[in-house]
Amino acid sequence: MDANVVLFDMDGVLVDSEQYWHAFEDDWVFAEAIESGDPAHEEITGMSFREIYEYLDEQYGATVSKDEFIAAYHENAEDLYGENVVLMDGAEALFSDLRTAGKKAAIVSSAPQAWISTVRERFDLGPLDLVLSADDIDKPGKPEPHIYEHAAAELGVAAEDCIVVEDSVNGIEAAARSGAYTIAYRVDHNAELDLSLADEIVDGPEELRAALLGEN
Figure 1 (spheres, one colour):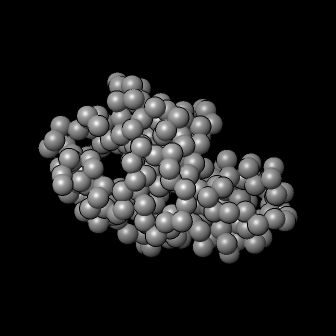
Figure 2: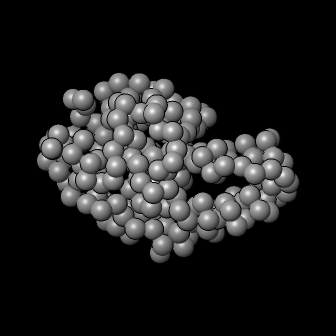
């Protein structure tokens, strides 16, 4: 694993947002915004919220308009990213040490740029070599590989020369399909999921740091 470009997913990796998004899905999305059915969180985790709407409408039937759905996500995101989430332990040191080691670091996320900016400003996360949102490319999002292929191209390398850190089933599939070396970041919210498509699974921030910096 000699790649010098590391692409980080944001939700569930850099910040512990998935627990809050899961609560929002249980309380409103799955309870009120669909006609019937019992979706699993992993069906939609990693997708952009626009694609979540289209997926749920097709599979379960939507009870709200797309505009109402998007507005609810934006409203929930304000407190979620502005007040509730916490940063991965050691993230600032990890990014600094990656730079010292001559590696490029990027955030590649299904979240809109505004949500990513809130996280970066709140935690002073940077500098970064690229910040890419699924909104920035006109192609299907995760689990399709396009976002990681696009990020690699923006950084002037092949996807096969990148390391991707992901936590969701959809995100891991997207990274693996792009050809990137894929590290599954396992914490509480995804402890029971099948992450086996990844090349490597790490448990928590210390193991992630060791994997990325070659520390034992």
